[in-house]
Image (tube, rainbow, N blue to C red; front, top):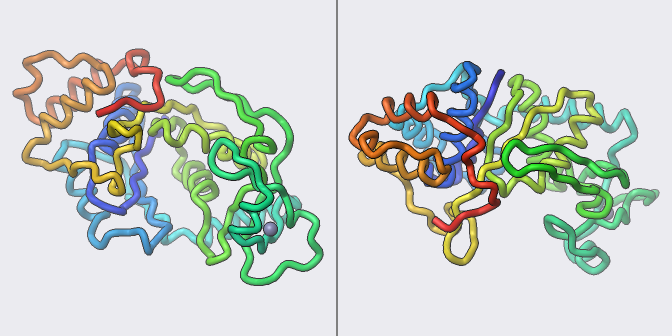
Length: 292
Ligand SMILES: [Zn+2]
């Protein structure tokens, strides 16, 4: 069994990412599996210099131990292109030169932004530069999330044909994640519920590529009082190693793991040991977000 933690190096580790690290770590280590790391640094302009190194140092200071080498998405474009070519060979990919405005003028709102209406599916000539989209179908995609329960989505209705490679040449998150998870042998994905709506797109790609389907568990995300997910953009407080034990205890409370009072005086390593031994995914609140 293999789990993973996949932060984006857009800033230092914050409480929201600590939750995902802790939950995926405990879930995997409690079952004797491996826990892998990868940096989701596809979007270089959004990256903060030094953040990747800072995140790794913070994880170490918090007592986390990962298995194998850390992989960096920015170094894996060839792999993503190969996979895009495989989908192209199955006639599942087309070029799209629609501008943002053209899409906004004709599209309906869906589960995660606008539903692309398929304008370019049958266009004979497409201008450069253009994006690449994958053709979706009008079929329900259903899965059982270990925390959030039964989830169902119809990609044609809720999302539309989605982008795999942007017009500026960047590979889309949905494609990169699917390729990396299969390459890293990931069997169990534990991550924030802000990604729950992306999961059917990833399952669709896994199905089309003939990949094994991982198990999913989406933990509630920490949000501010306005309901926005804690992130660098919403000015989430950075967590620091000097208070690592206190942050870990707080994260365990957030995930309803009920750490005993005396654990607060322990080292981060001891807290992680307790958390792994007592991890109970059934206690994690079945909510998409919780105000922190
Ligand atoms: Zn188009």
